[in-house]
Length: 408
Image (cartoon, one colour):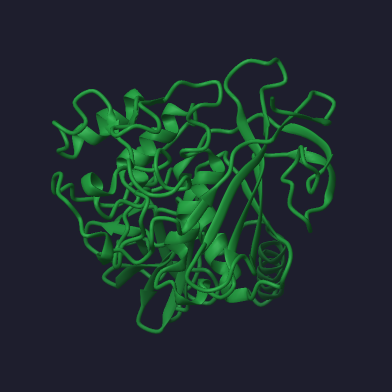
């Protein structure tokens, strides 16, 4: 019996050694306290503006070592970036795996980073998403320095339109002096040699004509067609100017910039460029003939006003009449000829009119707009007089080689 004890000890020692060299992982221990919230499904999705992301979002509560904590823990979700919203209960409880399913997530109205935050007690985790769009607006600045605060207005307007227009415009080659008569005919713009995707807009806040007169100018300078010469003319370059004296007095400068930027893209300014979208121009009852805009107009209740066409502005200066929706019909809609105090919504009608120009659009990006019927609006109630803006038209067209030739 005594002789067998060393043998058993040796065998036991050998078993311990083999276990230490094994590739098997011992079962995890008990999890520590909650330390992190990690997205395990649905992070970094892309969805159209004002639409729900397609895949359910799930997060997991873990300890510092990444071990799931377990069931019965409440997580609250909020949207902290991009202006979107949640659909469903903002609070959910973890299951046995420490996993929580977030409510539905509707994207915001602008092409900016979208962020949802999950919070449990003192810990939090972020989930990211992006707006699905293929349209790109580059804003470049010229002339007098533009402050960061004012640049933010331009960038925000561009992001809104990038979410509204989603279809790509084929790239164009450009090799020209933008300050030339066939370009934008504006001092201070550079000579360019580049690919354009999809539009480049130069912006300035500078002296125009002093206080109380012209606030803004908007011009789509240089157009382009598809390299195969198919499709309608689109804008490659444009510019916007705002009077440095008048601009600080505007209560909502982003609305005014958005209005002018739509003109640069083609609202009003391309309605007669390889298109026939105006009837009665210069007369007492000008009309927009685009079928999509008419249908959208009728859709929010203007059945009589838009029975066949959409009323355009018939008063004001050359920068107001014919280029805008009629103020006495559509009141505070963003693309009427006068800027109204308060909210100036971007309606489904304006978005549809861009589809009439052959843009691919996301109709869900419209603001809420209440049509109240035709009435005589006191023009003294509007913030700007009828000659507050000057609207230009295309001066040149890019050729396939990138050179520009005058539009005759």
